[in-house]
Length: 544
Image (cartoon, rainbow, N blue to C red):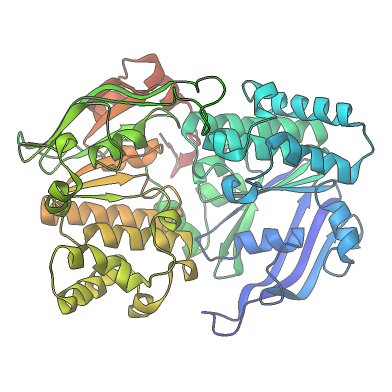
């Protein structure tokens, strides 16, 4: 029988005074063996990430700290050892892949320099050896052009590339334990499949233990040996993956699994023939210019959107799916005129939005609104939530009292209490901030909602609530929705039709059920094949 690689016993992590509860995690017992993958699931705020950070010694002390318990690794209690000893273990024997690489990576250091820093601190190598090792690492995570990427900065890479670079850093010293905190949350299905394959390959090669935090039960089904379910800081259920997924015991676990969207498309809804938005041959190209000082070679030209034409019918939800970099978000921003398209037209109420000035566009903002992928970046950190939601109606001439009442009403609609009105965005979880973003988009009672990955950062239960909310609003307001997503399970349950984008072009468009059951394009087939958890049996039937 294998010995435990990591043993967490009676762990209590205390929260600052005034928090919703006293403990972030309480009485946690958790073991991980070499070569074993343990998945931790639960809603936002359940304590998953703070448990991982406690192991790494990365809690935001002194306000959040370990109050009681042990974290035994290699016969050492990580809670009690000194900072320098913990620092030696961190990165060499225990590594962590963070949820959001853009915030975890140093923006002013190249990828190569950040990998080099790991080697300089932990091992004795020449600079030439360290560079060669860094390039080999980038190659091992299947990053294209490692010689270029080693000199690139985080902002120059796509989300998937940044995540791979972070994995390369985490694997630099062949750790005994890898902690992965939602490493695939914002990735498209094909990149996600590649990342999961990389982690599995690493584990097999080094016999590493993996603590994998996720809200994606498809991922759990594909990679987990055991599952740990957390709720409000407590461990409520644990067991082998087959037992937890197919025969859950705790009501909370049952509710989480019930909220997982099926890959079987929903029954088609009645469609209207009235076109509310028409996009004709939209094009958007980036790059091609010189550097800031006008020096050097011209930058690479990227055709982000190329000759895209779509129609959105009244009351329908049209999904746009594809890998990261396929042009989905760029198309959305061109439609809503947050980006100026190079050519083409966007017709709303018979007006071509591409030709309108900012002032001419303002009255039409009441008809079309957007929910952004990253709510933290799109919400003004200096404004309280109530002001953020009320801002749109205020600019359209509504009274202050009307705006405040509307903001309060929408907070209730998206499942937040009255206290949220006078709090700042940073005081909320990622899922809660997304709700605020949705409330803001609905403040003007728009006819068209452009939703750019609106549920990608949410756990399954909150995701289900938000999708149900959007569906109810769509029915009540006869709202037309352009729904951008990389999650094909979500697309199956939300979208009436689907447009598949690849390299800036629409390669296939059809009714959702027809596209899922009989895809015609090879790229669409590849996307469907990459969806995690396709073989998961739920209630005795194949879950796909």
